[in-house]
Length: 382
Image 1: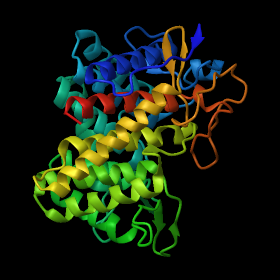
Image 2: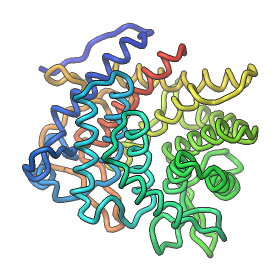
Image 3: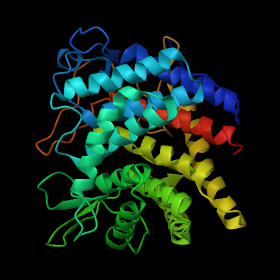
Image 4: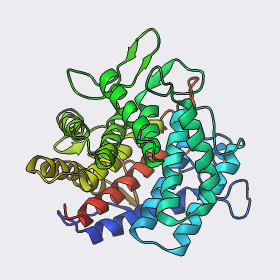
């Protein structure tokens, strides 16, 4: 059965928790499968309905699976259960198995996303099986840092230094206790990739030519907001709070419409707005300070999350009782009608959107991230 329905204008934390449960249920039912029929394994099939190649995990979407793992941790943090903890361990173990080369690869952005998910799995849920992965990933991120530049390249042996790698890598380094290095990366991002006209974070820079790639993506803003908030908490340096406030104003002015995160896509881009929502929620619940300005900053970050979540829920489809989120939260979701038009890897390694982006696991993970973020900020009193 496919339907849309109306819901209360101001949902409670309990209601957001129920909606996050439904988002989790949808992912589990539609996307989670054993890897190569191996008992005790579980990964996310990247499309629904899935092609034969997708069901066989013939292509490897390392960073999508990392965000699946992060969402599983979100659900377990909200309501811990033995089944949720077992699933976290299974997905982490299967990620390592499918990666073929262990926990690591050649891309610092990929490794940073997995490091963040594994660190939370261990710290929040006591999943000790990931310790070896954390040791390996920390070593890669520390050794990948280029002292003479103040940042990490996008991938090994690359001349491209970008926000999608350095934002999550610096958050991971901060959570590993490398606060000075994380702060150096935050300073580099602010000096090198912040657009002085819009105050938004640009994509990246080629060195030594200095050529800047100027696309502006929502997840770049998200990871920088998250990084500066982490540093504000752990260093007490007010410049990090000031940067959060400045970037949040730019996000409000240039990346939201009616308070809702604007736009959206599929493929790799399907994750972008969900990542922004995750770190807006972190700003809301973690940014330190007792002044009226700081309180207002927290409330404004929370307001974007809850407005976006209300829109995404109101525009969802329900398929057999579970939500199917739209790639653009302000527009009605569309039902994928088959496997034709599935996304594919480009020559540069990125994943394109499916013809109907709602079939992409990335889009549905963003919807789940958003529901968890809305629960988090509402439970905190926003």
